[in-house]
Amino acid sequence: MCENTQTTAKKKVLSCIQPSGMLTLGNYLGALKNWVYMQEDFDCTFAVADLHAITVRQEPAKLRQQIYSTFATLLALGLDPEKSTLFIQSHVPEHAALSWLLSCYTQFGELSRMTQFKDKSAKHADNINVGLFSYPTLMAADILLYKPDLVPVGADQKQHLEIARDIAIRFNNLYGDVFTVPEPYIPKTVSRVRSLQDPSKKMSKSDENANSWVAILDDKDTIIRKFKRAVTDSDSVVRVGDDKPGITNLISIYSGVTGKSFEEIEREFDGKGYGEFKLAVGEAVADELAPIKANYDRIITDKKQLEELYKKGAAIAEKTAAKTYFKAMKKVGFVL
Image 1 (cartoon, helix red, strand yellow):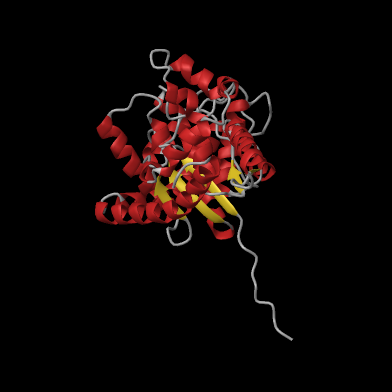
Image 2 (cartoon, helix red, strand yellow; image 1 turned 30 degrees about the horizontal axis):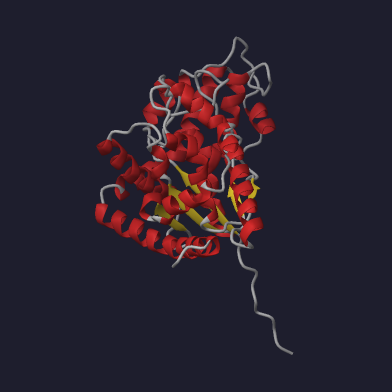
């Protein structure tokens, strides 16, 4: 009798992140920390989505530095090019090419209803460009090129995945099985990090108040100072509650970096004041991020190695992307 040595193929996962400034603690606890874990269980593709960054005006030298920095940060976090495909979006031309093809299968009304277009149009009223409007079609191309089974999504990206699924289904109904229709993936442990100064808003690097967010690459003194200044409430009890959004946000952050449950944290700080708790949160975050910063400082100085890694990643990504793109082109009727 022969032994069955066949193993089950890992499910494919794709996720991308924009190089639009310094990555924050919110990015880390909300997504990036889980990316590191996911590469052990899934066939992962990760990209620095630089094409998306230019829907708002960018200073060229600054954008170039941010692309380098974001790629280096992903490596510093622990993303392993031997385990995952890691590349820069613009280095794989099929992203832009498929975006045009898919735009002809995307309805104007679908794009006009996108929440992010409305929000960004309000913020950048002097630059409501076509790219900002068609952004979801490029995102659909990013996803569909790699035929992922799963796409990690937060609440602010759910609408984009839904339109990608709609486009894929519409195309497949016309031309047969071309694209995989991906499912949303909600990681088991996700911390929804809010602003340290206004917990009604999510933590964002675009916030003008620098004390409202913590960068992954901030030093220990800066991190502790920002947490000491974090908004809480007039109470002094460390507990989770809808009436305590500031302290609930800090408890969520502390849980995210220590792995402790909310109940454990409430017991740990029972009878202690906010000052002691905020210091503990700051120190825990600083300890979590310190190895990442040390890795980053080493990686960012070796531009030759960085170039080798992003070129290698792009070459691997393009093999997959080209197969999907040319299959779609052939189905539509183009001469190849």
